[in-house]
Length: 166
Image 1: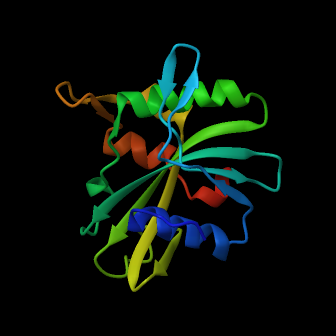
Image 2 (image 1 turned 45 degrees about the vertical axis):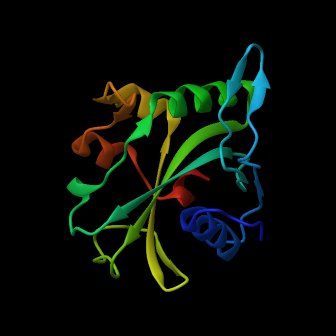
């Protein structure tokens, strides 16, 4: 397992190994040049059995509540633009996805998430969203910080367990 700076990345890599999914971890310390622009790296290439391959950007969020209405799903505008660009660069057979990895203070209620796991004595829940769907419904969260999010009601419709995307 590669050395991971944040517990969310380490937990996600543990999840991929436990599911026996083939993947490549991307070196997040470097930005790739594509034309005149430097693109923010995504975190993993995950290869699916059905020929669907995902370019995954992991977003770690803490979740202490008991409702899906409290799920933070904000990202930066650059996250979305760069993931969409990577999707174009990789072409057919590759889709960009944001994986929200929620660190839960305790085991979440059964009905809240369909995919949960533990890693290093912490509970995590996994929700994924394709970058195209996210971009379709995103609204501005903070102009100052250039962040966007999808309103809770719509996020609950477009997010799903990662395994459903593969």
